[in-house]
Image (cartoon, rainbow, N blue to C red):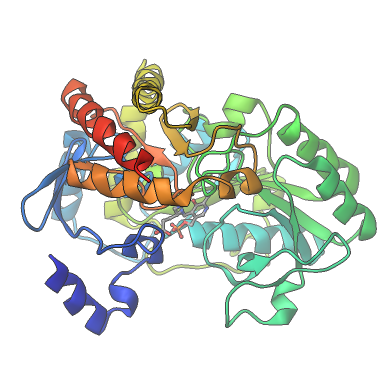
Length: 425
Ligand code: KE4
C-alpha cells in the first residue's frame, strides 16, 4: 500500500484530500480504504478493520446502510444535479426543523465549513457587528476567520494560525477557553457592542470528546442575551449524533443559529445552517446576506440524508447507540485497567475519546497533557490487529448501529495487545 501513498503524494498535496488522513499525529503511512460495509472497512490489500472513524461522524448507521443505498439508487435514475429547487429539499428541511426545534428555517450547503462560514456571516449581517468569539481547541472548518490562535490574553486579538489568513481577518476573532465563562465575559466586557456571535461546539469533538461543564452552555446563552450577541451551536459533529435533536436537546439550550453536517448527508457532502426565522430571513434571496452554492441541496445527497434521518427517527435508535457507545467505552477501560494503563474515557452517546491521562480531561490543556507516545503505540497495534481508531489523540471515536458483538470481539482482542504495547517503555 505504501506505493499508493507515494503515487498520491506526487499529485495531491501530502497525498490526501484532508490533512488528518495523512496520519501526521501518529506517524506511518495511512491505510488506503478500498471498500466499506457495516462496521468495517477493507484496505487495498483486502485487510478488514473494525471502523471507529466512520468518516469522522457521518456513518452513524454503518457503511452502506440498505435504506441509504436504495434511496441513492432510486435518485440516480432521476439524474444527479439540476440547479433547480426540488420537493425533496423541502422535505429534508422540514425534517430538520421538526428534529431541531430551535430551527425555523434552514439552508443546505455542501460542507460543515460552508455552514459555519455562512453562520458567522449571518450573525454579522443580523447584528451589524464584526467580531466573534470561538474557543481554544474547537474546530469549525477551515474558513479564514476560524484559523486563528489565541493572543496572549483577553486584551489581545486573534492572530492567524495559518499562512494565507490576513491579520485583518484574524483580529476579528477572539479566543476564549472552553468551559471557562470568565474568559468569555472578559472579552465581551472589553468590547461590549462589538461581538456578533459566540460559536461553540456544545461537545468539543475536536479536542477528542470534551464535555461542557455544568452551566457552561447555559452561561453562554445568558452572556449572549446580556450583550446582544448571537449564540451559534456548531453541531456539525453532534447534530443527530448524540440525540435526535443534537446536543441542544441533550443540554436543553436554544442557540440562535445551528450549523449541521456529517450525519445529514448520509455519507454524501451536505452541510446546513439554520435558526429562528427572524434571523434566517436575512439570507438571500429573501434578505441581503449573500450565500450560494451550485450543488447545495444536491438530489443524491438529499436522498441519502433523508434516508439516514428517517432511520434515525425510528424508536429506540438512540438508546441502541447509547448502549453500543457504553459497551465500547467500558471495553477500553477494562483493557486499560488489565494493563495497568492510566486512561480517561470521555463519552456522550456514540461519540467518545480515550485519553492517556489519569486525570479528568475538561479542556484543551488537559487533553494536551495526555501521553502522546503511549497513544502512538496504542494506535499502531490497533491497526495491526484490525481495528481503525481516529488517527489523532484529539479526534473523536464513533460507533454506529452496525457495531455488533463480532466487532466488539475483534476490538476486545486488539485492545489487550494495544494497551500492553502502550505500556512498553
Ligand atoms: P467539513 O468542512 O469538514 O465538512 O466540516 C468542518 C467542521 C465543522 N465543525 C465541526 C465541529 C467539525 O468537527 C468539522 C469537521 N470535523 C473534522 C473532524 N474533526 C473533519 C475531518 C477532516 O477535517 O478531514
